[in-house]
Image (cartoon, rainbow, N blue to C red; front, side, top):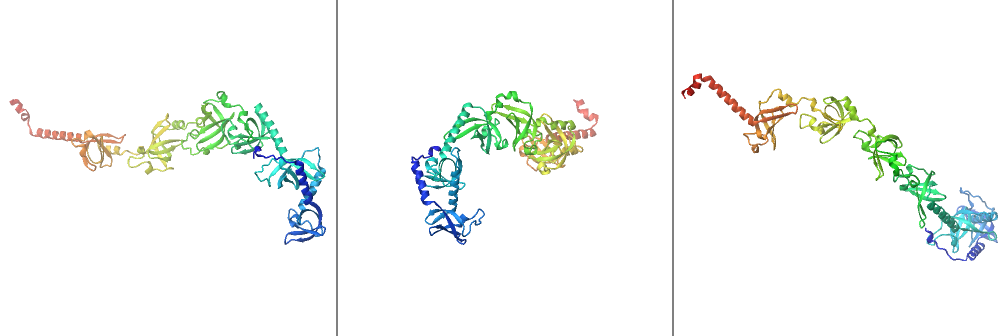
Length: 550
């Protein structure tokens, strides 16, 4: 409720009070009664209140807190005659206690009470304070007529005590206006001086902290806690901690005081060059771990981000929590200082030995090593050898081109491979499994050579030539220009073609065949045979006779 909504009624205070007292005197007469009957079945007691009159009383008023009866038939008890045959023992106890309170009341001392509003009438409200009933005029309540105040707990100050009439008047308005005045003084001083003051954290929420400064609560929003940016306050503070704050603003209508902790401390980014630079090695504390990286506290109200890729040289980091824990200290290297964005990036792995350096110091190309398959892809498999990973490409799995990583390997398999390439600059290693086996072409070359005639079945056609499968189970290429006298456009899969081996490369596992060369070779062999036959049947004179005749 806003103070502007409170209605202040113009009422004759003295007349209202007198009316209240008259009602008390006429209806709430305090008398001594005698218990004449206790009916536990109906939960009532019959009380003789004098003058030949009996009244009933609920047994609850004659029981202690544990539910035990504390009076018996014949006992005398104080009751208040409420009228129409109704009486109350508890109200009588309150009346007696109120008289004792009034008798001991010190006019020189101020009394602030806390109670609950239990009754209301035209003039005001009855406030119950530990069994004592005080009267609070409506004009001193600072309560809106738009809401029901029954059961509301309030604080008020005693403003009048009438010992003759046995009444106490309290005012909530007096306390509220005092608090308003005190609040205004505190706020004015905070906003005018703009100096850091010490406050005590009273409550921590997800959106900030409530801090008590000089008896007034202000909110430090989570974005005003640290120069690092928005933070979770519960990770840095506890209730009861003392902090330095500066007042930012005060909303009089909402009575909302905004405070800042970060503005009460120097901004490290104002002089960041003097504090930290790229290449610096600094000690940091892990403050927050996320799947994509880790936030580390560098002190000086600075926070840096350690990306998951900068945690380890191992490229298969699944989650940073597998390597780091919150509140642990680590040394990191600063790799980026973004003044404009107020961001720092650091690296942990740059301070660790490079696995490639260790690997190359112990291994070289052509070495045979063992490793574990860490992942299988469409293009091959990655194999971890020691602390590094190498690529076993599909074409290096087997000499059988129908086999690949997915058909031959699975994660966790141990494989023996040969190192065929090391690129230290790119940090890449190429491995081969088929290099440990003899090439089919190499075996083929033991029985065949350039010029050997072979026959194969067309397996595939490309723009540059035709692939044929030889009887030994290996493939050979007939380039387009080597097909003559065959025509490329007439070639069909499954067709048999005979040619002569024109090229064998056992290292590259390649064979080329030429039909064109076969035709020439056959012509040459036929010519050689003709020449041979002629030489056997001709004499020297036969060979040169015609020439001599000419």
